[in-house]
Structures are given as C-alpha cells and as structure tokens.
Length: 587
Image 1: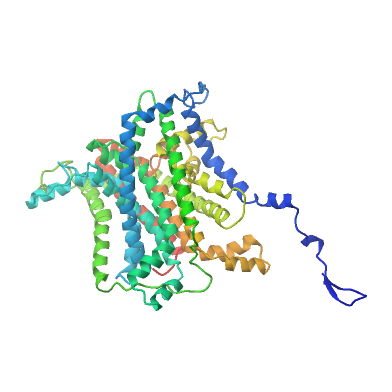
Image 2 (image 1 turned 180 degrees about the vertical axis):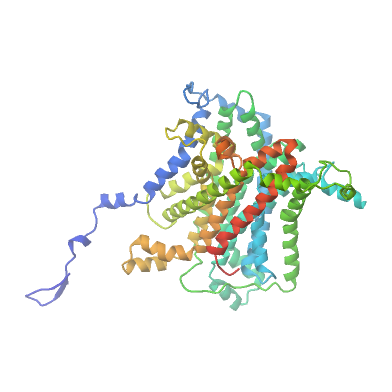
C-alpha cells in the first residue's frame, strides 16, 4: 500500500500483511506440495512391488500369502559366481551395447530425415519410423525365425530356389542384435524427432552465416543440442535390450547363446521356482542401471540444452542434394526389413495349409492356401474379449502414464521441490528390474493387498503404468529440458497461478511431446507380454497373451499368425489417433 508521510510529504510503500515473507518452515513444507504426493504414488506403484523382490533376495522363502518368509540370508547371491550367470551377463551386455548403437543409428537417422531434411516423402518417413511399434518384439522375432531358420527358413528356401550360394542363420548373437535393433529403433526415433522438431534454428542459422558447412553444423550444433534425447533414448534402449526375454528366447537360445533374461526365465520355471535367486540378480541390475543413470545425468548437467522458446520459428531443413533419393531408398530397406517381410511371413504362415515346405513351388499346388482361418479367429469369443481388454487397458494406462510422467518431469526439472532426484530415481527403478522378476513382485503385491484387484483389468492398468514409467519419464524429461520457461514465468508474473500458467503455456508448447509420449506408452501397453503373464486370468486376457499362448501351442500356429496380422492392424489404427488429434505438426 502507498501512503504519504504527513510531515515530510514523501511517499512510502507499506507491505500488506499478506505479502510478508512466509516463515521458513512454511516454505519448506511448500516444497513438498508437488513432490510429496508424487513420491507416495510412485512408492505405491513401484517401490512396494520392488520391496517384495528385495525381501525375496534376502530371505529363505519367497513371499506367499499365509506363509512365512523364513530366515535372513545372503546365500542367494552365490548365484552371481556361477558360470551360466557370468556368460549370460557378458552376452547380454554385448547384445545390449551393439543393439543400442544400431538402434540409435537407425532411429536417429530416421528422426533427422523426417524432422530436419528435405528427403522426399517426409511424412512417409515419419510413419516408417513408427511402424515397428505395431509389431511386438516377440511376434517380430517369431516372424524372423520363420524367415531365418538355418534349415526351413523362408529366406533360405528362396535362396535355394534361385540357386544362390547364400544362407541365413538368425539363431545367433548377430541375429538377435539385428532383430532387437529393428524393433527398438522407434524409441530413439520418437524421442529424437520430438527434440528436433521443437528445436529453435537460431544457432544453426548463425553457424551457416559464419560459413559452416551443413555437415559441420549437424555435428557441432544440431546433434549436440539433441543430446538429452539421444542419451535418454540410448539409456532406455540399452536397458530394454538388456532385459528383453522374448527375442532372446526365440533367437538366442536355439543358437546356444545364453543371456541373462533366458537364465532368469530358467530360474523362474525351475521346480521348485528359484525366485529368491532371481531376485538377487535383480538387485545387482538395479545398482548397474542406477550408476548408468547417474552418469547420464551428470553429463547433461554440464551445459544448457534449451532450444524451444515462445517465439514462432520455422524448422530449418537441411538440403541433402544428391543424397535425397539414396536416403529414401535406405528408409525403404528398413521398412521392408521391419514391416513388409515379417507381415508377409505371418500372412503366408496363416494361409498355407502345410506347416512345412521344401520350395516356393509348393504354393502353386491346388489347395495350397486356406483363408478360412481369419474368419475363424474374428468370429471366436476369444478375439472379442482380448481385443476389447487390450484396447481399453492400453488407452487407460497410456493416458495415466503420460500425465504422471509429465508431473514427475516437471517437478524434477522445473521446480525446487524437495526430493527431485529421488523422484527420478524411483521412476527409473522398473527399468532395472527384469520384467519377469517385476511381474513376480507385482503378483506378490496384489495377492497381499486387501483390495481385490488381482485378476481384473484394473491391476493390468496399474502394472502397465508402473512398468512403463521410465519410458514415459525419459520422453517427457528430454522435452521439458528443451522447452524455455520464460513464457510460463511471464504468465506467473502477470498474476496467473502457476498451475494455470503450466496448463495454458507450457503444455501447449509441449503438445508434440505429449502426443509422442502417449503414443509410445500406448504401443508399449499393447505389446506388453511378460508382466501380464503373472497377472491375467481368463476374464482379463489380452491380445499379447493370446498370441503367446497360441504360438507356444504348435497346433495353433496358423491361428496365432492370423491373430498377429489382425493385431498389427489394430495397433496401426490406435497409433494414428494421437497423431491425428494430438500432434498436428509439420514433419
């Protein structure tokens, strides 16, 4: 309030009582307003199941309702000295490192072509970068095993028919790396494309004005600015490959290549189940991933990566010159390897009457094809149940996961809230726990919980949100670090409450990131296999489980292939919706 001194006539400002600085204790409590509830939610979703895993690692008995945990012990960690564990760990690290590098090369190249180049058919390139998400890695690995089997693979049959002295054997470490890179490349593509599409071109324009070549500009300006998305997606892909079980089971195990996930699968399927030893291995993986995450965070803290501001900008396109069409040809090769050939293989497997053939000429015989399998699948009660369950669970989990990931990323990177590092650390915990073991932890959790959610769709939604929290956080964190906060702060200075400023300023600026994160979590939920294996019942069955069951049953191979083809179509439709309504942006 402004008042005049009656003696001097000078104006003075008197602070209203409501504007006095808040006591220090009140400010400290206020710093927990956002992070505190988030920590409680994450603890319920993630730490409680993880706690069951930790308990199992240090007790003689696995957690079971109505039974004792036994006594405390360190004996389960003796498994870390077994030769099978050591060889599996080394093989997994080699596959993880090589697969991550190849996936980053593929996904990053596609992201650059779609977001920042003048390659022909850029919208098609964007779709190609997403399409491998339509195939779960398990189905893709099965399709490639049908093509690359050393004896009966379709590619080897085609080579023999053509008289070519070539053979393909995907039952190897190289084949496993190849298939994993194909189907994990969309993750870095989504994250790097989001960063590049929002990038302010001012620094690139400055480099061009000062005589920098296009290649030097990309090397020293564009890609360094996209480093949060590159490192974030690299960490994500590395750990996902490290813990991937289905592809390793299909391709590595037949080639006598032991990996850590397949070793864990053996432990969980031994009789009796060796869940305590599997939990001990999970503790070691948590420590490894926590160390890698800390190194990544320190690397990003060394400089600023802000590239998005409030002023309107036009994305700078890099002229590829004579490389425009070769670049498009490379995109088409990836499209063929990741989508066309696997789907054609599934189609052929579904419609041919005989499960085996010596030559493609066998397909010319009368009655070689039977299309009735598709009508049988669509008209079955199983198809209606699993389709509705899968779509409903996936949409709900993706929406809840996107909102939660944004709130955690905002609290960790935009506020001075207490526990920001703890929030991020807890969010990354599911990335370090193998899905097989985490599925057991979730099973134990919801068997002990008084709320009767086990066996319902609700427990699947909760499980998907918990398991996919790292992916959502990595996607949101890279976007929020690249978004300038000046407009949000300006709105607050002009009187808008912080939540309103975030809703009407920050969220619209991050619309592409929201759409990309929702799409990522939607696809992950639709393709999730390992975790629901421990949580589903006949009334909560989903598509991925149905396909898995039918593939495991050799007599239902045709039905599984037909269901996989229909499943790909459903995922394509679901992936189009957020792009159509939530992520309209120039590509």
